[in-house]
Image (spheres, rainbow, N blue to C red):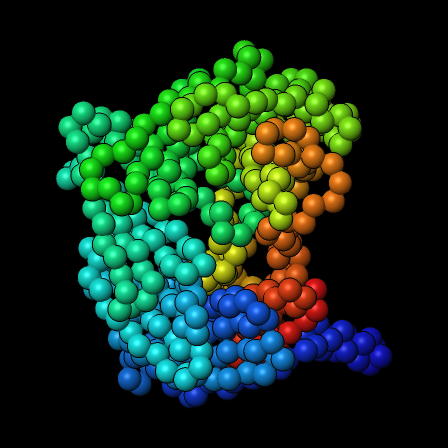
Amino acid sequence: MKKILLLLTLICNSIFANPIFEYKLGKHEKLQGTFTAELGNGKTLHLISIKNTDTKEFLLIPFLVDADKSVHKMNPGVSKELFAILSYHNNGNVTTLVSYSEKSNQLQIIDFDMVSGQNTITLTPEAYRPDNIFRLDDKTVLVHFLDKSKKVETRTIFSGSNQISGSIEIPKEQQKAFKELVAEVPQTVNQNEFVKNGSISKRKGYLQDNHLIYTFEKDEDDFGLYDFDLASTSGFTQTKINPEFSKETKEISNYVFGKKMLFLGVEKQDVKLKSFDLASGKSEGNLSFASDLNASVNSELLTEYIKNALKSAMKPTLTVNKTKSGNLALRADSVDSRNYSYNYNWWYIHWHMQQMMMMQQQQQLQLLQMQRQQQMMTRGPAQQDSDFFLLPEKSKEVKAIEFTISPDFKLATGEDELQFRNLDQGKYMEKYKTTKIEEASSGFTSNEIRVIYQDYKSKTVFIEVDML
């Protein structure tokens, strides 16, 4: 029995084998969450959000990890309100975090200088949480839809001291179409990194070349495209596209990339891909998976994909990853609409899930207290404290179809380097899904995963590095 316990201890200790830094929280400090930003050139920024129970202040403490894995603790950002991070981006030696407070209706823009270790916090009034958030390498663009006043308001943030506000008035003749578009908030589509599965929302939003491009699937033969020029102050360009799929088509997915709008249509025996020009709405080409891709997609994989995609709860998705030679790497997949969530920002998933888990734990604790009070009244046994929170159930993975086409819609062959790597981040985070740790977030360099987390028992924060 002792040998078994010793073996288990060794296994547990080897799970987290490469900590490069640790930080012990003070007696009056309570961890609220962790956050990781990828800075490029082998650097990552790891932050912990802490509440001081004495001063009631919230601290955002940054730790910069260099390419050689040396760690530098920088000066913390301090606030009377909890930091709720919406986005981050980089400009030279400055990393900017954009946070929003619903309590005071203002943005907290925190600029961290990676050289001096100093920071500045700029407070900017913002009446509502943004409807869309677009994170680019060097800026963050926030979008508000104001249905009552018939306008679109934008804020482009480079830093706290460099912000550009914009407003696009909707003329009377376009207000009906605008109202249809914003009846539900369009879902932001991230094209700044590779996202394995696409959005299944009927309304999607993209940011390309200073243009906000929105698509609205009104019907299977009626797709609206709305182009808002951020340099303009009035109106938008509207284009209607009919992909003209056959009556055999059961499900349709779409994706905007560059100057094209791509459509994926799933039939009983085939899958069709069509391309349309954004400006004119004219057809530019089409492909049949069964006949045009038979050299790279075998019939068994195609049959399996169609079978999965045509199930009642399944929805097809389409994503595009540009290659270094200018070709388009396409990925056709299908997801279970009952539990699918379009996770378009890896860093935001961790941050958001931490906040959700914290709320869930608080709710579960309240429920346990109520149950215990009832049990005390009835003199029943008490429940155990551990493992009381629930995790969302995983949906079954289905096989995707991946292939590359040239800009003129011809099947491309041979190896081609992708612009954004297809990295299964979730696989590398599996070992951190344990009750031994909490509040884990991760970032990736070219060959490493870097994780910050808190040990559940000691309440010590660790930064760990592992090879990919």
